[in-house]
Image 1 (cartoon, rainbow, N blue to C red):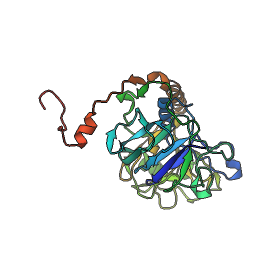
Image 2: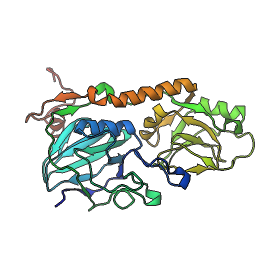
Image 3: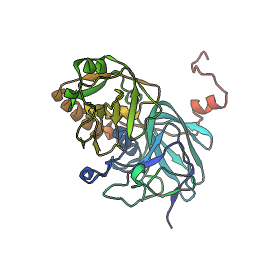
Image 4: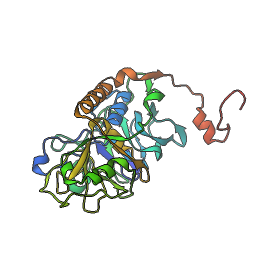
Length: 341
């Protein structure tokens, strides 16, 4: 008999994601995949999985889950969400054990937009075209091709607690990167006037509520085209920045269409793609152009960071003593914790 993770409340948009299905864009099939690959690798490293193991991507407001058949170990990485086990607050970016029948509640994001929930051993879900990633628009992957719903059950591949210590991510590695989003100019920068390009790089743009896994829609000063606003449709990549006729940038994301007919003024560098996953509606974005050789080195640095995630984790000791988060939730201590509190 299989042991399942049961979805009691699904949250805003909780989907099963891995690194996506590459090699099929020429057939019109989106790559999809996790929005923040660093969060995926981190959550998996914490619980002892391979870094690319499929996990749950959670957006802005998370699910409530339970596992009746076994104890499991989990970790949440990426954005900082409020988390509780049977009402007892616990921290993100570290491992916790969920005992059989307990409820794991993931609330709202306190900073950032998306986190990844990994469980030790992963999920036993059949891949489609080499991936279990959910692409909702084409109803591909996941359980039924869409976000998780109340009552869904995700079979666990290896239920039970691993024989390894509890681990945490050092606080310095949890901070969101600040500053402009770095891009390479083009491939159709010649479709824009000099004034339009100057406006694009000199302006702050606001993330709108229409943003989703397909595209991050921005609002701000209009980017002027040099002539026609359309091109013969060509391929897109994660991070392509299209400028449609209204002059408002759209950053194409994991669930993007495979081709597009709007000119692309710039492309977000690989090293900054995880930052796009954490943009919330209302946040402001500014762009900075860099040289290709710098972008290549930054991509290599990111791959090396992911490769070394295991080595960066810190072992922690679990005790029965209440945490400060729990005492705060019970109004037993103040927000300032010191000998003079």
